[in-house]
Image 1 (cartoon, helix red, strand yellow):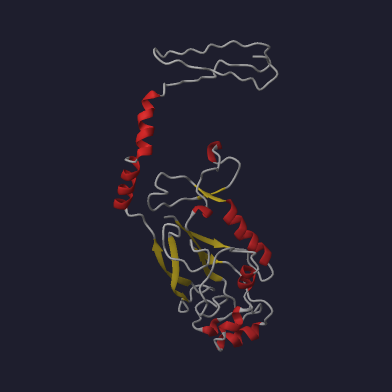
Image 2 (tube, rainbow, N blue to C red; image 1 turned 60 degrees about the vertical axis):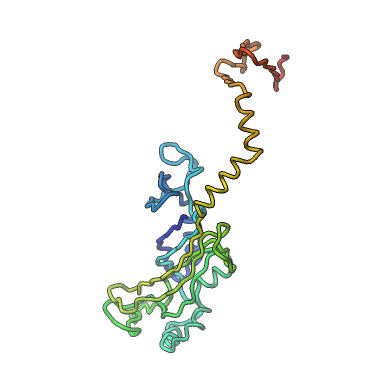
Amino acid sequence: RIICFVNCHLAAHLEAVNRRNADFNHIFRTMVFSRQSNFLAGASSTFQVPRTANGPSGISDEGRPELSDAEMVIFCGDFNYRLYGISYDEARDFVSQRSFDWLREKDQLRAEMKAGKVFQGMREAVITFPPTYKFERHVPGLGGYDSGEKKRIPAWCDRVIYRDCSAGTASDCSLDCPVLGSIEMYEACMDVTESDHKPVRCKFNVRLACADRSVRRKGFGEIMNGDQVKAALQQLPCVPETTVSAARIVLRNRETCSFRITNKSQKDKAAFHIRSEGHAVV
């Protein structure tokens, strides 16, 4: 199964909501990965290359793994979505009262996801921790929120968003829905003071469906021993080997062209039908 982790840093500033949405869409739509022999067989660390008409060395991006090919995708990082329609002092008051339910209604990311403008088909655990931005460095506790000249409004900039195979509905883990994730822990590391952000960590419980190899082998044997497959295998020796080469057939800009078809079989007769799709007469 393919599980892809994407760490990203989206556009900053309160008013840059559309730029953040565009950043996400650009990442999701243009990210393709180098094809590795073990991509589908085990752990694989790949680098991002931009989607182009032709990839490196002129190779087309068609067939190269992309984000939509993964059964589970986890986005994490500083997404920079802020709180809107609220003042600095109001936000600080609600944080001190731990009124996170009300603050979540002012969350830009929540509003944009609800409107289907970003992280489409993905979801997030319920936030139960204080906003993780912006803090004075080396100042512990909730008293460390930015109190400088700019007084940036506290916000949940740092997030973990994911999707699995369930399409947001309750599902059982099966070969039709092979990867199911649930979040056991979603919290901020409020004791970290070396940054103006508080790190966020998320613990997933992921269930993976796999095929029983013994059952698969038994089923394959039953198919191969079936009457239909046996009949097809018995007919294979009766089909003569045929090779067709068009290397010497050049019709463009020529009035006539001659070529030879030879049946080298010693016992089988062959019938040929030649069709002209141009204006020439056969």
